Image 1 (cartoon, rainbow, N blue to C red):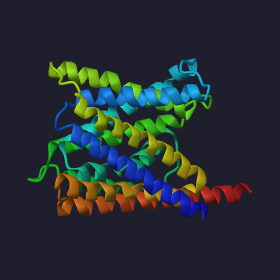
Image 2: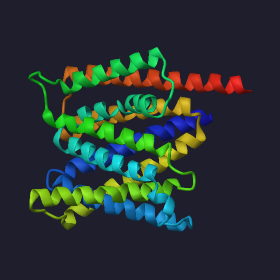
Image 3: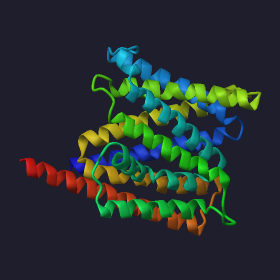
Image 4: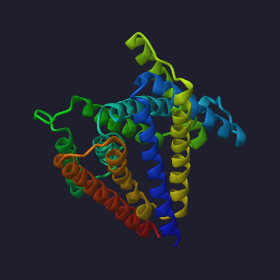
Length: 293
């Protein structure tokens, strides 16, 4: 019963994130990506800062200047800038399908930089998954969309963030990390605005969509935390891939986007490879626990 509840809450979280993507893409038709990053960063940072103070945690702490936290913020900057740009410039289904490669990149990074043991089966799954990404991006072919590389940038940046999170001092809370994670994208947005040379700042008509995007993102974050605490991680985590389904539905009905055959095939390959990797890791963790018992 707990696993069922956890899975349903995870699906809800992915729906909320897909709706956040909807509002971001809608805003990108009127506003520059730099402006969107600045407003989302300030808005989300303010919400988590208030939550941090409510929990009576410090917003300024020496631990927040540790190398792991700084690297996490850099990953957040790279990843969020890349994914938001991909949402704005490419179909939602395409950007979301590429994003599903994140667990594969995290597994690869853990093996290369953290000394994690990865067997031949997961190495094969990683290679197959990257092949799926290539089918979506289609480099060198007529269907190649250069802007889709921003989604690849997003995957790499978010993987850096996730890997760095593992090394963050235990004294740093999730609320503190989230506050600094959101605020870290503000300088990136400001730099993009300066590069463009001009900025069309939000008008009252845009504020409701910004508010909705921030609420969806914050609620999605809380839903993920709740899902992980309620259900078994091995059961709940695979439901993260439901985000791709929601992205395809929203893209079709709201933006009139129809994913091509290669995007669908590539997405299926990426999701299947990611699911295999997650299930394999869960089984290995289970064996390790039983071995220690």
